[in-house]
Each structure stands twice: as C-alpha cells, then as structure tokens.
Image 1 (tube, rainbow, N blue to C red):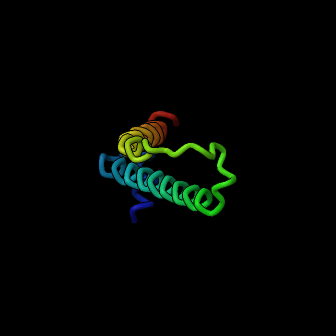
Image 2 (image 1 turned 60 degrees about the vertical axis):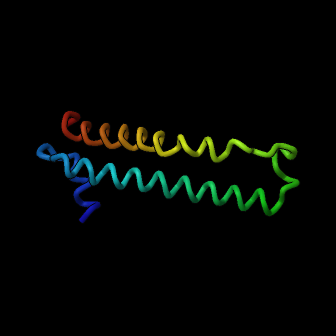
Length: 92
C-alpha cells in the first residue's frame, strides 16, 4: 500500500499524503544504504588494517561528521521526492 501511494505521487490529483509516502520511502532507502555501506567499510578496515589507504590515520572526527548526515539525507530525500512528484504533475 505504501509503495502504491508513493508511485501515485506522480498522478495529477496526488496530495500531500502521497508525497510524504514517497519521501519516507526515499529517506528510508538512503538511510539503509548508508548504514550498509558504513558497516561494510568498517568490517573491511577491521579485517585487514594493513590494506587501509591511509594506514596511520585515525579518524577522530567520524562521529562529529555523522551528526550532519541526517540533515544531508533529508535534503537529498526532499529534493528527489519533490522532483519526482512535480515531474509527474507538470512533465506530461
């Protein structure tokens, strides 16, 4: 049902609820992809630390930089959802 409403965000009579469904799906997808990618690279770096590109660098700012990630993900999801929704309404 959620996916049908999200795709329905492109139809001419779509409302705010359809847009929000699409936004939630896009934001959730970005979040899942980011977490899977981060866990993969942490695992690979822990498994073979000698193959790191910068061997002597310890990233102390990693968690400080992660504080900005939700805002960036929200902007990307909003831009994609808005563009997808508006393209369906005006682009035909």
